[in-house]
Amino acid sequence: MGALRLNITSPLRLVPVLAGLLAGVLVLAPGAHAARVAPNVHTGSAYVPNEVIVRYAPSADRRVRASAQRSTGTGQPHVFAPRTRVLQIRDGESVAQTIAELERRPGVLSASPNLIARVSGFAPNDPGQPGALPGSWQTVQWNFSKDFGVNAPDAWDHLNAVGRPGGLGVKVAVLDTGVAYASRRGYRRSPDLLNRFVKGYDFVDRDAYPDDLNGHGTHVASTIAETTGNGFGLTGLAYGTRIMPVRVLDRSGTGDSVAISGGIRYAARRGAKVINLSFEFDSSVTRGQIPDILDALRYARRKGALVIGASGNFSAHVVAYPARATHVLSVGATTEHVCQADYSNSGSGLDIAGPGGGLDAEVPGDPNCRPGQEPVGRDIYQVTYTKRSVRSFGLPSGYVGTSMAAPHVSATAALIIASGVIGPKPTPAQVEARLKATARDLGAPGRDSRYGWGLVDAARAVIP
Image (cartoon, rainbow, N blue to C red; front, side):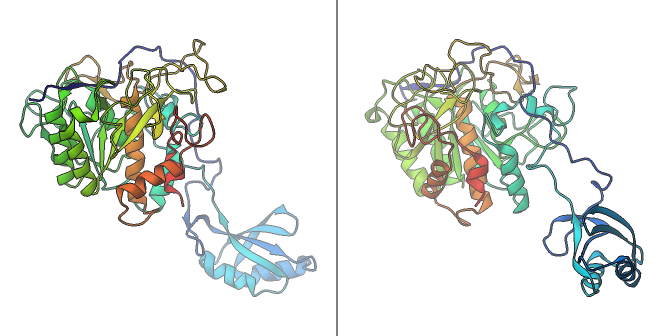
C-alpha cells in the first residue's frame, strides 16, 4: 500500500446545540380552499375550482351585472374590490368555459380564475429531532437555509417544477469511510437513506461491500442525498441522486494514496458525474508526492466527472491536496454566522465555500465574523452512527469541518446537472463555472482567499 496517508477533514469537536428557531416551518397560507386546487387553464398554476373573478366596467349597473350572472350560470357574488366580484359557478360548467362566457358579456372588463399562491420553496415534512413537529428539520439544518446556508427550499422547488426532484438520477460517488447503504452481516442501513444506491467498492478491505465502520461517510452521503419528505429525520440537499459508496478510508478515518486513486478511477469509470472527497493530506504534501492521484483526477475529468474536495482543517493559508489539484473544485467552510470557519484552510487555491459549522475565524473587517463571542455557530447535523456502532443511528454532535462543507457543493453540482439549466449534458468545466458564477459573494468583492468565489447558493445555481 502507498506510504502517504491522509485524514478525514472533520475535527469532530463538540459544540453545544443552540436552542431557538432559525426559520419558521413553512405552511400553506390560510384559507378554506387551500386543499382544493386544480391546474390553471392558462398558466398551469393552481386555482380554486368552481370560482371565477370578474371585473366590471364603471358603466355596468346592477341590472347589467345580474344579467351577466344569469346568462353564465354564476351567482353568490362576493365583493372584495371596487367593481370586482368572486362568483360561484352553479351550472356545472368548467372554469375555462365560464370565463369565456363572461368575457363575451356587455359590461365585463375581465374574467379570470381565482389563482392560489403558496409559500416559496418545497417544504419537506421531516421533523429533525425525534418527536418534533413535521417540518422542524429547519430548526436543525441552518446550513440549508436562505440566510445562513445554501438556500435549499427554493432549489428544491425549481427541481420539482422541471420534473427532476432532488436531482433525480444523477450519480454521485462518495469516497470516504464507506456508507451505511445496506443491512447485512451485522450492519444496518441508515433509516434515512432509502435511496437506490449505485454499486460501490471497498478499496480498504478490497471487496464489494463498502460498509461504513466510522460514521463520517454516512454523514457526508446524508448531506447529499438523505431521504427528504418522508416524515423522518433530516433532509438531503440532492435527495433524488443515486449515491455510489466507495470506501477509501478505514474505521479511524485514514487512507492511503493507492486506495484513493483506485477509488477515483472506479467512480469515474462507472459513470459518476460528481465525486466527493471529504479528506485531506497534510499541508506539507506536494504534487510530486502524489502522481498516482493526480493521474486519477485527470482520468476522472476526461470521463466527465466533476471532483469536489475539502480544502482542509489546519487553518493554513494553503489548500491541502487533493483539493489543491488542478482538476478538483476546492471547498472551504463557513459557519452559521456566514463567516469563514476558524479551522478552514484558505489561500489562492480556494474555489468556493460551503457550510461547515463551528467557530468563526478572525477576519478583519468582516461584519459577519464574531470570534470568541456567544452564541457560537452550530455543527452540521445528519443521521449517522451515534456511538460508533454500526447499528445505532441518531443526530450526533461534533461534525464540523471542510468535510461537511464539500458535500453541500457536490449536491449543488448534482442539482445543476439534473436541472438542465446549462444544457442536458454539461461538462465538468461548465458545472464548475456555474457554481462559481452563482455563489453568494462573501468577504472582499469578487474572488478572495478566504471564501473563493463565495458561499455556494443552490437556488441561484439551478434557476435560469
